[in-house]
Length: 127
Image 1 (cartoon, rainbow, N blue to C red):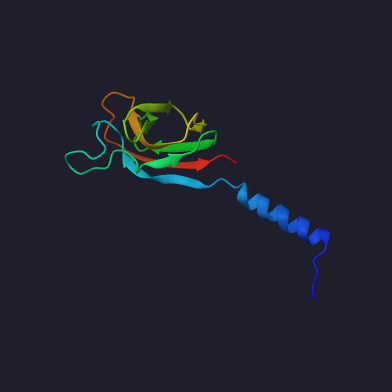
Image 2 (tube, helix red, strand yellow):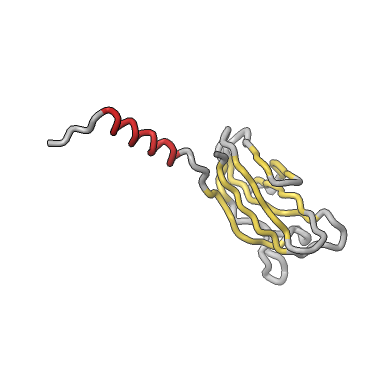
């Protein structure tokens, strides 16, 4: 019968904890910006993300990019039930919610006449 030694067990535990500490993908994809303020516009274009759950006191990292030569969008986290603005960012970065809730993202264009662009986004937990 094999009995693992302390060093083997410590190495295995360290490896497992490192795996659990990796950032995990929460949501990602592509949507059109929120130039038309509805999640599905009259043409059937998707303009906000599928809702996802955020957990109180958990750090989330958001990254996004918008196609177009001159474009700037603001990421807005909104409550999925009320559509109320919960948090927004002008640049890639981190957010730690004060409560757990179901949210979705939309991306508001900030440069006049530069709306209706595709936004690629990714939300992960922080490292």
